[in-house]
Image (cartoon, rainbow, N blue to C red; front, side, top):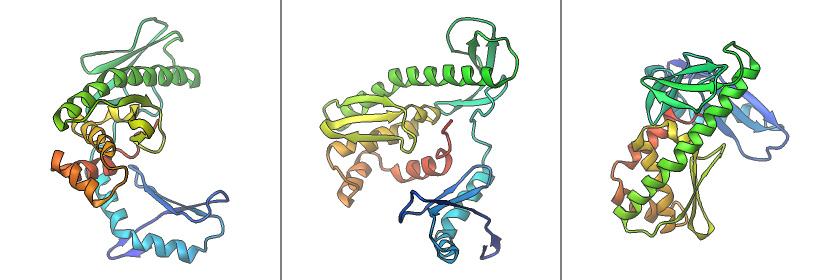
Length: 238
């Protein structure tokens, strides 16, 4: 599609399970994916993409201006991993025992398999790394919840660390707050935004104007944090 002076390329993915909704996602590698109902006409899809062309262009430009996100893909020594916004590098300790730990600029991951590349090694490294992130989240995120509850003047909610694929957090019945362990890859200022976002649902259950005004009263720069989280950290799922 030609939009202003740019050519926007995108992949249309049709699904029988989708009935009405359209989802547009932009990835750090420059790919644009448009998920649509199977029967939707291409012309209608094009019109929706054109409607969001400015947003797509903005996100593509943002990704072009940034370093690649520190997300492991092969789970081998040397791959970058972001922990609380700091980039570390994997050090796979093959044929060893122990626990995942940080030493200098490296996150060491001991595994029982020999230190050779392969699917089995990648699976073991990924599992060990996720377990470590989950454990760190269970220690760190409750601290941030206590901090913000004290700052705002809210009672402590029941908090859980979760493995959520499509959201950073949620606030459910009984003020049960679930936070995605993946947010531990982000800088603390973005972790705090997610925490505050969910805590404010203890006051307002929806995303009304009153809700956002309450968020702004606690975190005046929430829009900047929210924008950064959407642009930079929407693809930290591994």
